[in-house]
Length: 180
Image 1 (spheres, rainbow, N blue to C red):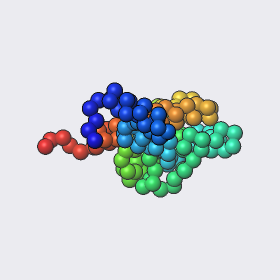
Image 2 (cartoon, one colour):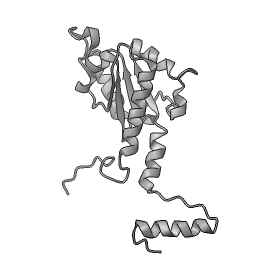
Image 3 (cartoon, one colour):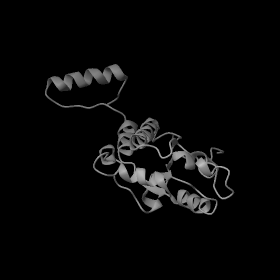
Image 4 (cartoon, rainbow, N blue to C red):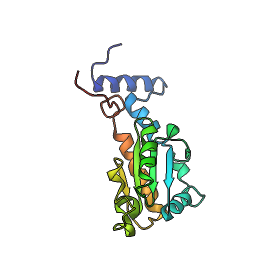
């Protein structure tokens, strides 16, 4: 069967529904991104007080499982997203970068709290990285010292929206060189 245009498809759906057949129209991209957006598996890299706030959103009061984030992974090879919560020192930076490199594509990063975003109160210390953007590309920033659990949930929802807006069968998830 050849599909001519959107109106033709909608007319076909109306005819099928008259006969009692349930039909859903959508693109494969939308379906895959719905699944990807509602099943983001985080890898936690919590080093200080922001980590405690992250733990609280996994508990019953905030329950981030209802958004599809409940499968917190301990292995970077099974994670889609790394949540960097807290102070990152120069000694930890190579380890954080190695964890990020071990994650499968597409991978996402959320920076939580003032320490991860810009160094926080330790900004002028010789041992603290002044923002993880120097190490990793960040997708979502969640400011605060430490940010409230509601802010963490809001940031994770923003990442969900970003994932759902990307094209799975496009060039966003294909990271090859286009020099052919």
